[in-house]
Length: 103
Length: 130
Image 1: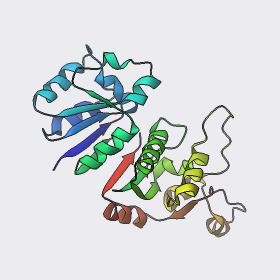
Image 2 (image 1 turned 90 degrees about the vertical axis):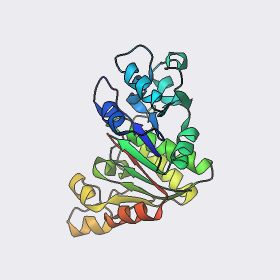
Image 3 (image 1 turned 45 degrees about the vertical axis):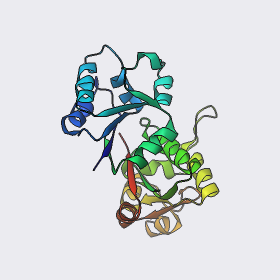
Image 4 (image 1 turned 30 degrees about the vertical axis):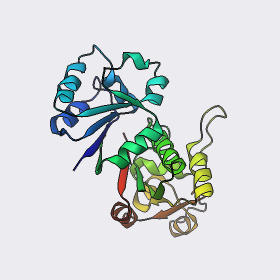
C-alpha cells in the first residue's frame, strides 16, 4: 500500500518531517507543503535525511506555489525532488492508496 | 476519484485553510468529485458570515461559499466545535437563546457522523490543519 505523506511544517520548527521519515516506506511519496517546503532546500541540516530516504526509494515532491510564496527559487531544491502545483498535489493523492497528513 | 476534505484550522491561524481550498478547487478542475468538506476544531471559524477581513485580504469563507454554490459542495461544520466557538445556525441560536445566527451561506451544522461517513464513502480523506 503506497502512501502520500504531506508535511506542512518546517523541519527547523517542528520534528514532523523527521517523524514522517522514520516510518515512510520505499513505495511512498513525501510532499512538502506550506512551511514544510523549507525541508526541500539544498545544503540545510535537513537535506541529508531527505537524501538518505531517497536512497531507500522514497520519492519527494514540493508544492511550487508555497516555494514561490516564500521567495524560494525552484533551483534551490534538492536534486530529485519534483516541484508540483496544486493539480499535481491532487494527482499524487489519487495515485497513492492512502494519504497521511503530518500536522 | 472521490475526495473528502477535513479542515482543522481557521482562516487566520496559518495556511491550512487556504491549502484545503486550493486543493479542493484543483480537484474539481481536474474532474474529481468532492464528497464533503468537514470543518472541525478551529476549522469551524471558516464558516461564520460575520467575518469582515480587509478588502485587500482574501475572504476564505466567501471563497468556500462561492465554490460550494458553483459545484454544489456539502460544507459541514462540526456542531460541538461550532458551539464552543459561537458558530450557529437559526436552530442552534434559538436553542441557546442567542438571538442571531451567523452560519455562512452553503454551510450547514451537523455532527461527527458526517466525517465518519465521508471517510468511508470517499476514496481519499485529505486532512488539513496546523
